[in-house]
Image 1 (tube, helix red, strand yellow):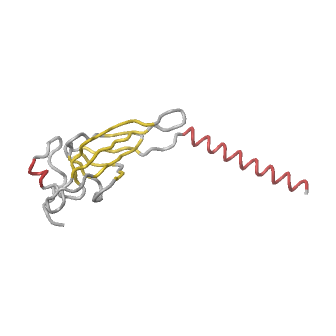
Image 2 (tube, one colour):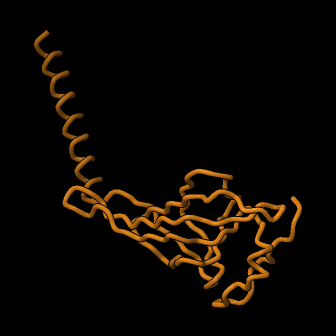
Image 3 (tube, rainbow, N blue to C red):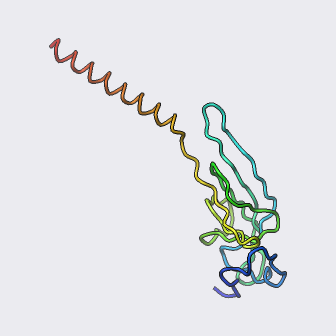
Length: 152
């Protein structure tokens, strides 16, 4: 890969990247976030609440040209950290050239902090209900088999 890369870690925490640094941000894991949207979904009686963070990423190709915008979606039940318009973000792995990418975490290099969404998981009540239904089904099947064997 040609072209200069940003040093790792990127500068001191809380410092805005300079125009010169952004102009050389050709690492395939880096991009500048814009059109950031954070919303909550679910959380009703029968669903698990989720935080959804979506944004687009402006990126540079190794030759210095602009790559197509990439749509990023992050989903989880709890958000730690934040992404704002204009923040320089770093994905854990190289980003694809186009399309939609779902990430569980990024590093906000503008603030120097990780942005992590804890994955959604089922509630303890839902798991207990499922176990109870399965136990009832097993007992019912055993009862039918025993009744069939004793009548034969």
